[in-house]
Amino acid sequence: MGKAVLRMEKGATIIASVTEINASKEKVWEVLSPIGDIEKFHPLVKKSHAISTVKSGMGAKRHCELLPMGQMVEEVVQWDEGSSFILQVIGGKMLPPYRFMEGKVDLIEIGKKTKVTFSFSYQLKYGILGRLMNALLIRPQFKKAPPQYVAGLKEYVEKLDR
Image (cartoon, rainbow, N blue to C red):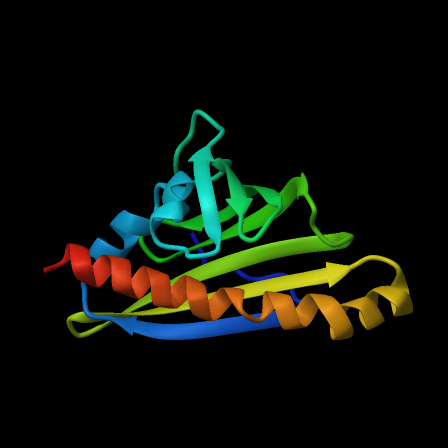
């Protein structure tokens, strides 16, 4: 299976963050692959759980309660076992009016460490009004999520690995 490719449509906003975790790629993947467990390390997720019979891999779905408010339902749309996956937002409450929203996680082993990249891509509805709303309200909020995702993952995995 090829590398997961993030949606890169014209007008899409992409926010990414990278970190190196002092743990093997296998150990990091072990934490990431049960997608319903994101609440264990992501500081902006209050509660999460799998909502499909498949807990990881293609077609797996999760429900997340977000901080400070809102909910999101995501589905795995691409999966490269042990290396990367893409989750697409397929529903939720108190989310901005989006055409699409998706997140990609990519792992690369570097010696005894793992480089983790989290990329978030989205596009709002309503043309110029959506772009204005994105610039003034949405992007400033969303740009906080990727750094917190990778920092939370790093802290969680490194504590487990001790």
